[in-house]
Image (cartoon, rainbow, N blue to C red; front, side):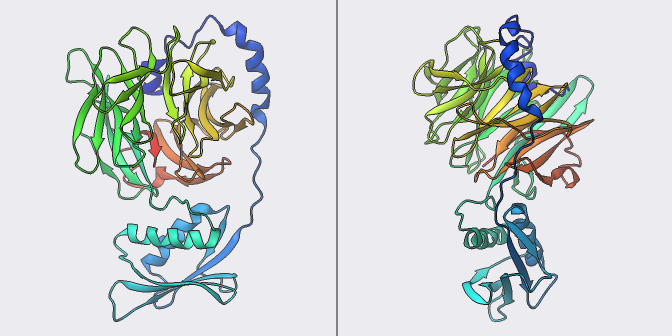
Length: 425
């Protein structure tokens, strides 16, 4: 499979060689002048935290807790061997209450927190919950990643002329990894509902003589799967709107790719775009007021924003970066957009304000990088990076520093070594 990915085979092969490139040449050149500028690192106070399990210094609880908090390495320095650090977390067994532990947090010997927790070392979720409580006390931040999950697509079988890609789910740290679908086709473009209990995705079904490209809905609470849209042509790239009863999706039953507002019965409520150019690959901000999407209406595929509630309302081009762009995704607060841009024969990741200002390059000389998705707190970005012959998942912080490499973790590396389309919730 080409490094550009199945999304671009479906979407853009008719549009990459636009005849309107001359009109954009000057603007693209000017925008590309800043591509060599490194992203500035924010100067933040880093808190020094030491952790101790008094009865068991090698406990699994201590190990997982340390691994969790180390994700926020630009905010916390975490150790189990530095009793001189100003912040101290102490874990104590409670012999009279199995699986209960006394958790205490001190700052320079002054007590900040003390509570008994039910923790099961074999169930990471209980320790992640504790990580979240400690993180909130230390940083005064309410949002974190410790209860979050990622939906993604991985290859389960590859043979000459045929690939099988299925839907998978994992916790933020790569554990609790499980397969959600067994379609024996190609799953693409998954997206969580705002509540996190539903997933929309596209399926290319090989069981049909004419391959269907349908839009599907998976309910994680009931495991029910159903077809939401099977209109002629392509049904692709759906994202939920606030309330989880409506969504935006790209359809081309009319002969042209347009973005439509739909409900979960698959009924079209209204067109959001109506233009002779291609429009698709949509992302919606937190309030549901505006969307970011791809369009070649001015030449090569670039990122635009528009109002969701009306057709062709407040349409504005945001980027002129590289030869063409892909996969724009809003930050949770709607202030930023992260996206891929094709230049120098590879994709790299960029971040830009939603109003088109303050462009920053996040990756360079790091393979070909696609499918970015912000963490729920906006602090991290997960993405797929091509390392021939496979694609692996990585996590960087919002400033571009790599935090996590999933390529060394099982089962992501074996046998599911080609994973794309991560969507974080």
